[in-house]
Image (tube, rainbow, N blue to C red; front, side, top):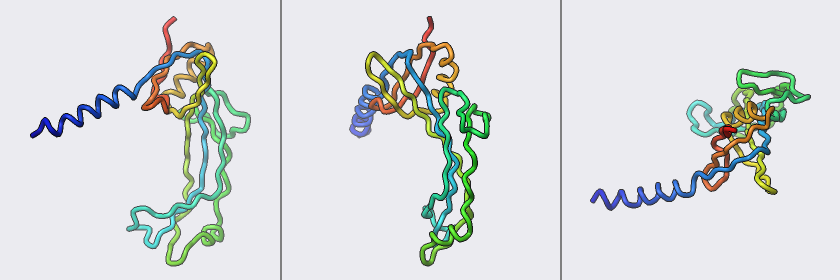
Length: 170
C-alpha cells in the first residue's frame, strides 16, 4: 500500500532533480540590484480581520545598483548589505488616501516598503542571458567583479534563475 504512494513521489523528485540544476562558467557578468521605496496603503472592509486586504501603491522611487558601485543618483547607503538607495518618495496625503477608498472600506496608514530585485546578466560564447537571482549571488559578483574572476553559476529549475555563483580556481 505505501509503495503505491511512494512511487509517484520518487518519480517526481527524480524528474525535478534531472531538470533543476545546470551550470555555466563565465567571465562576462554584471549583477544588478534595483532598490525601491514604495508607499502603500491597505484597504479593507475590516482591516483587522480581512486576510487579504486590497493594497494600493502610491509614489515609488528606485535606483539601480551595478556590481556594488555607488550609482550617481543614490542618496542613502551603502546599507548593511552594501546596497545604495534612492531619495524617499513623497508620502501620500490624507486626501490621496481617501480618494482611493471604495464604499464600506477603511484605509490603513501609509506604509513605506523597501524592495530589492536582483538580476544577473552573464555571457557564454556569443549568447547573453539575464535572469533573476538573490542577494548571495549579487554579493559574490560584487567581490569577483573588480578582477573579473571567472564564476561558475548554478541555475535554477528550467534555467529560469541563478541560484548560486562560485569563483573558479585559477
